[in-house]
Length: 458
Ligand code: ATP
Image (cartoon, rainbow, N blue to C red; front, side, top):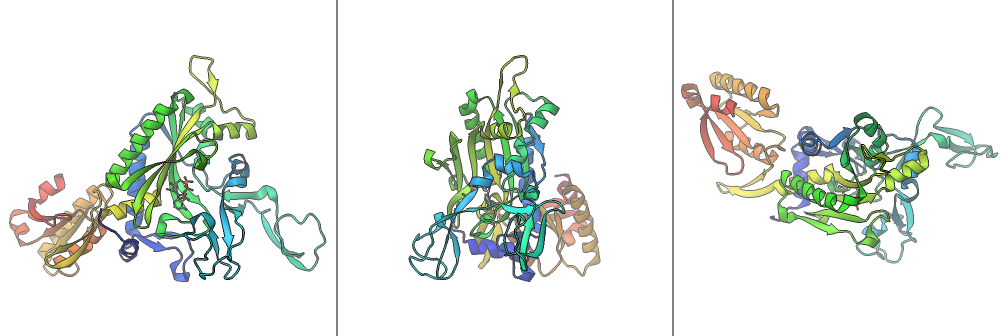
């Protein structure tokens, strides 16, 4: 793959309406991103492709859409309250805070450049805490500014924030727990045979210490996760099937095979309950980094839920007395990291008629706009009328069709190339005679003539 610079992707994404900085007009909010008209379509195309591939086209998968706010016990039982932390260090000179394990030089502050100024690392919990219900959070003038219940201490005259500990909740830091907590519901409603999976897509929130590299590390992002429930006897076979399924997914995204790498996570780096984890890494412009993870999580999560909730999470094999807590294999996909890999794989520069051209060679099924329709000249009503007719018919069929009559044809092609539109249709004077239009191919720039009937029948 040719060298792609992150700056080129970021500027194209902003300029052409894919992705903007969140809250941009107010100076932004670090780690948040807004999707513009083309970005939201590209993102949805990726998410819909995933749903089609992993849910709709299989008969062993069930979808759920759980609430983002969950009972705090979910995060206590899962271990997130105690251990979902990153190591944070603070520079005593500039007070910048950094994630200790991501520093290029562990002794030098990347903000002020001073050496030997870091505090000892402390565990920073990445969950966003919030309060549910009107009993949540009050600011009262009683005592020293403090967090938590005041326990009736006399702290007269000062500001205090009080809250009911029982009202605490968290914005979910992963979608997986909404799957585990619905395991029993799905089993009771559908009686699936093992192995079967439950899939969920949706927002996840992590208060990352240093959000960076565009949407790669954000504080609000989207995940697509599957918990695939299995009999532990068959975990190796099922794991291998998921490795293959993940590779099929990368191919469907149009990622070149040699840009995705399997990193077998060593035992000391794996979660203690995981018997095998593979990180699939992608060659991003920022280096080789995690695209998604595939982990065998044993019965850790359902076991925790059973222990803390007191509700049985066992599964009985139909027609037998064999009962056990199913084990799980978890493929965990990040939408933004997939989208960023898609953009980086599709980004191309070439030369056309002595001019530099930028285009996105997106797979057609992901392209946010499938067709662009133009009249050759916008001041010829008969051309415009015919082009409008074709535009409406294509739009009724594909939805994602754009009208462009601005500037000359060459400029229109460049604009469509940059957003990855695979086909540009132009209505010219010949169309009025023989009903043929020109259809230009984005990647080769070649134009062919076909009748509008053939075009619409495609
Ligand atoms: P990293 O080591 O890069 O922080 P992680 O190992 O914590 O990632 P997981 O907890 O395994 O990530 O999350 C599953 C997937 O969710 C990741 O593979 C990634 O695609 C996505 N993801 C996780 N954190 C973020 C984030 N801050 N921004 C965007 N995507 C993320």
